[in-house]
Length: 197
Image (cartoon, rainbow, N blue to C red):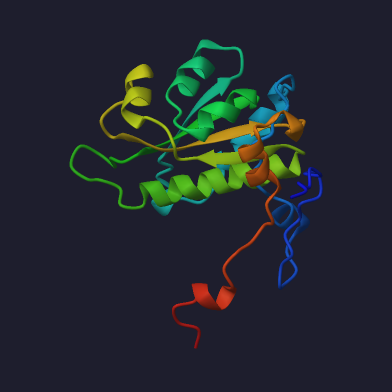
């Protein structure tokens, strides 16, 4: 089997035209372990998350931003599981995505995780626009991560975003390389629509 290692042109083959930044977004594992994200660009990416919509403008999204080479990055990376640990250390930044669940002392925000998801989506698309790439991670030890950063009980870690610049995919293990270069697929739109009157 021949592996296709051109990961620079992986735009989605969509059935309807999308904005190029949306069609071009994909989730690489092969990051450049020497690349840095400059602070102005990182701030812009985080600003996109800040301006995402949220129910009643409660803004429950919180982020732990850990730049490669810092103690915070090491703490986040140590909690990763499985394949994630093998490649995520090459990302320039690991962003822990946290939802604040409480509205106040008596009420929980039922949309907190949804709103965090919107914030991360905005962050992801802004990063793509800036020439960066992201990969969302679910394989991590949330309890260890919460303990490492002293999170409150009402702060739920939902995901981690690896952020960086594309690197040399030939440095990945063969198994990761196969995942990196596999064809991009999605279920047909008709399968997603429960009702379409």
